[in-house]
Length: 103
Image (cartoon, rainbow, N blue to C red; front, side):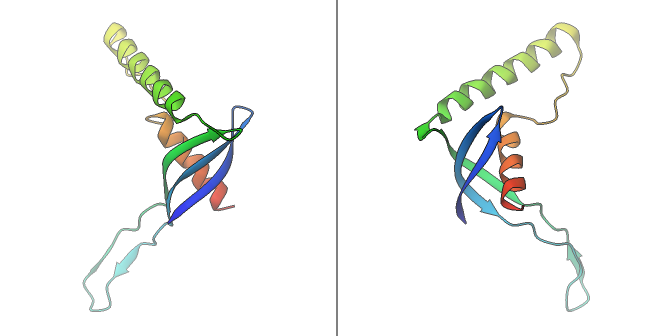
């Protein structure tokens, strides 16, 4: 479902517009006895990012590009896989949004 959520990010309040889907539980068995299905975590797909009513989505697009380029550069120069908690800035925003919604 479409949803708006306000999160704290680096001391600023960001308003995220996007699509939220609730988590689904694991089902060990179907009613007919067949093996069940694995549940899915809750997700929030970010469409737009606003701060003080201004659309700043493009800033996050550029920020994500810089992070990706930095990680690739470090890996190329050192052979070391650059380790971060999130694959990209969108995963981080999504996680923060889900946590805020589920409070």
